[in-house]
Image (cartoon, rainbow, N blue to C red; front, side, top):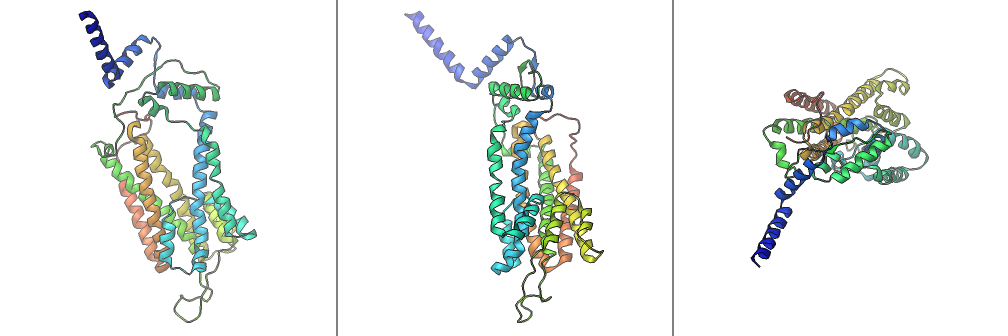
Length: 375
């Protein structure tokens, strides 16, 4: 009887140990030792399957999301001057309305505006733009979870399946080996961004992201307003004559398309002669092209500097600051621009100077290094 009770007690202890995190870690270590296959890291597996159809599928899905998002800001900037006249609101109220929508957009929306606004009306343009959000939904089946994240969460079976599918799509042999990683006992926290090794980089990245998005979208808001003039050439309210805004013509929309494609010098095709308006458009389109390139750099660097444990938290926080920059840019590009062009230019220059200083303060170089998995 005593022997049975001792056996029962040992089974309870084993069960308790099995259900505990330490027990699971010990069992995992035990079975890993039994596996005689060579150890294989995620980085080795990714390198072995190469670049092919699998990566193109992921890029198509993510690109469709950015494609739909980038059209929204262009839609707002194109329709903004028209709605200001139709609704009779002030530039400050316009900035408050557009500042609530933190979306991106340039080229494709300009093409649709050129085609649809001329043949139909702004409601058709709005419908077509919104319908493009169906593309990411249709492509959602191609996207997969991060193998590094799944491995840290101990979903080794799902990681193996992702690697096998990727290798098959790329026509490469499936890497053979036992997947290993530096297992973390807890998920990433927001406070991890402020650890001594990352706090300086985190604050600088937030400021850089805020500044770059503010400059880019500020230029987006300013471009349509260059064509927004009063038909009686006087300020509204200065006389008893009611003034109306001049709607943007095809030339203005084409200018936006060219800037979105990153070819500011193509504005020569639009302008018939060298004038002050040409110089203004050329500079604003050049600013937008440079800012469009620079807005991607902070997000790429953010992905490289943070470990997998809280990389998503770092990207999410940087994206939040970019949203604040978008809201702030609407006030600069609409409300402040209507008061003083010089003040708007000085504000943009000051913001750019802040971004330069923050960039110089970042000392960590990621060139030639692999993505961090843990601290």
